[in-house]
Structure formats: C-alpha cells, structure tokens
Length: 84
Image 1: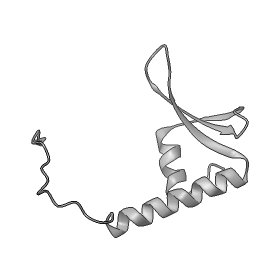
Image 2 (image 1 turned 45 degrees about the vertical axis):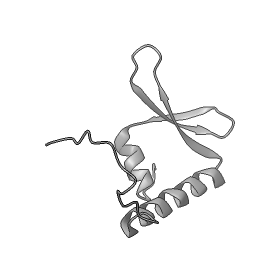
Image 3 (image 1 turned 90 degrees about the vertical axis):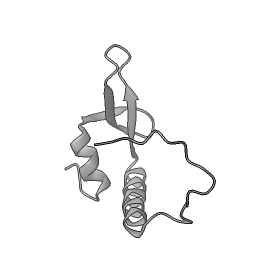
Image 4 (image 1 turned 135 degrees about the horizontal axis):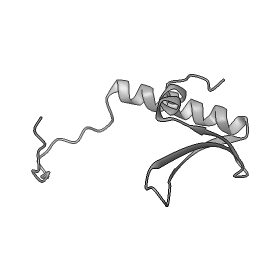
C-alpha cells in the first residue's frame, strides 16, 4: 500500500457533500447520539494518561461512568446496535 504525501492543490475536486453511504452512516450515528442523550448517556473518548491508550466510556450526562466500552462496542452502537 502506498501513501501519498502530495499536498492537495486548489484544482483538486472537493465534493459539495459526502457520498450517500457516508451521509447515511452520519445519520445513523446522529440518531444513536440522540437516543443516548434521551437516555441521559453519552460516549466519551479519552486517552489514558499513564498508558496513552484509548479509553472509551459510556457515562451519564453528569459525567458518572457507567461502563467501559471496547472499540467493537462503539462500532456496533454507531451502526444502530444496542449495548444491552
């Protein structure tokens, strides 16, 4: 796999909107956020200060942690799944 290091130029086409499948995924994720907020919850992404590893926590809107989540849990949730 080759990674381009070219600098984008003004002539590179930038679409006016994301592709349809990306818009659909954004809509599903937004609905999940609304569902979580209606239940008084949110997902918080942080970095562990000691290890530098990603921490994903389901928490109350007040900040009280409810559960630690895996990346797979978050992907399932973002796709419209449930944690229960």
